[in-house]
Image (cartoon, rainbow, N blue to C red; front, side, top):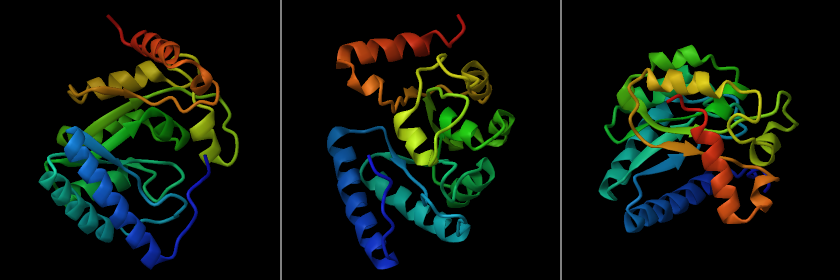
Length: 205
């Protein structure tokens, strides 16, 4: 998997609109609960007001298709902090739109899990669990798509992250995202069983 290539602004808009149409149409057909939205990968700064406006429009489109949208915080993007993420979703202020919190992205971005408590519960729309090695390979994009570990098999504070999320009152589904050059070679049933067993063991009781 390669890192997305950079396109000119007009081409980016056309590509984005095309993907938007098909993803939301697919969400409607499949009755998807929510659609994940990526920020500007490889971009240093965020035009927060522009993103507020566009994220709000996206949420309105998603509502017409009977689904929700969640913006993922990523360390190699223009939305790499909880502060920026909150500014966008709170500014858009849509009931069907919020943030996706993935322990890998927050940890690699040196985000303190204590900051999770500053997010209004209604703006947390999705959670993803996984783990990682102590040292990331470069570029970081390659680390995220090839080197993730099963929860408990790396150095991330998975249980601490779970507790921070539970403290918000989160009662939605817990996602597991294991992008791994090792795990993806396994048969599907074995891969699923390994992911489930490793993840469930991180929950107390």
